[in-house]
Image (cartoon, rainbow, N blue to C red):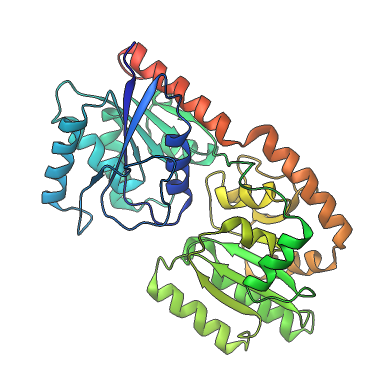
Length: 381
């Protein structure tokens, strides 16, 4: 039986949860049933595809969100690849892929993955009108499904929820020597209390509120001298990055806070950590939180980021109802009072929780069933 070709389309393979998700999924497809090509709108690369030789096969060299020459190259790539399924990721690729598929005959099935709910008004307008061009829309969290169905009025039968997952073999607890080496590599001492934020520098992630909370604790004498915060991620907004850095300077937190930029060796980052902070405005079953939990690092998360129960508060970490300076400061004060033994118990329980629900093997199985359903139904599934 011929294998089905899946054509993955994404903006880039720069650092991010959706980008990691695509690479993990493509590398775990059953090779007896599926083959895949990856196409990127632009060629910014953080995730290399060693498990997928020759990928990404197509690079469109887009210079802007709407760039006609790159769109023409996308149509040509689809005609060359002749996929049965086009699977798109992120807003711009979701737009381009659905439009380009209409210029290909026979038209491939289109599956659209929605990883974020921070759509601007213009894109929400487009999404309402383009939804019918998707044979299936995958919401990567229940909160995104609610946005699509309740907020945008997209028919519920067109939307399916597939929560994210991580590779528990890649992300696992570090033994003591590896933990010591990771701390040395990141410039933190064995006695430091290390918090990490593995997130792009963007308003959605609330780094500014974390800095304000640290400033409040420091002013009140409640921030330990050996506290360290490692900010790991690409800069998504230069203006926001400048604002965060200015807040650090005003609060004289230069010794406590370090910017690492994009980090390739994420397991090493988690090995150096005592706690992970994710007080975001919203997330879709956040991959970075799952990675940390699988490494037995407890996580502080906001309720809007935890709609898929990636952690249970009190068992695997801490949850704040809404991210504010006051709520983050109070949570950090509680975390700093939590004994290492309690944090270790939380971490062990957290890994077991991730293994039970949030693995890449389960994600791949879910998607292969979805691919089969779309191909077998001749339409929406």
